[in-house]
Length: 257
Image (cartoon, rainbow, N blue to C red; front, top):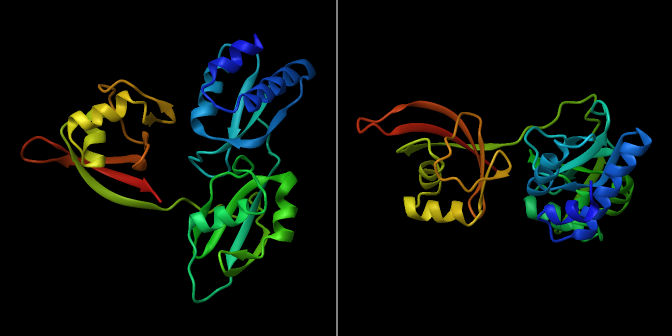
């Protein structure tokens, strides 16, 4: 595979990152070893790489620890997926009883240590505890240096995800009424915008269906499909529970929070 072709085929501004990924693919092929990226990549990047790998001898596997994780570490292999990735899961506990902190507070405090966003996976917050997948090479540094989230004292420790249960994403569930299961109809119902506005969102590339950009307004959406709508959020189509008297469909949507 030509390196320039690979770099130019991936729609990512950080060309050095894509170049390094190509080099890792080459090392995996030549050494017959499993090679990992030392970063977590967003879905619009790892999906594009997965398409290219379909016609390559190298197999691509991804892992973000959590089910339906957006940001994932990549591994390249000529055989099976690795059992373990160089990922640690940190448990960050807010020790203040009087102040609450949210996702942006945890993320901002970690990055204020000089850590780049790509070294972190998705953050999940449950019961005042933030669970943060991180590249193993920075986990000890975070544990030793992160003492506050905003102005709240915190405690950071390892969470052994191989032995302990992983936290699950939290969802906000709602019922929408859609005229059809076409993408433009579903986007219109989810975002509460007109059909023409939903079509504009689709044509401008702001819609991902199962992490792939979709420009087809007539694509039929099915149960368990995941819609990422830039500016609105990420949604899972959970269930179809019936129809109205006017023949519109009642659909249960789970919004990621």
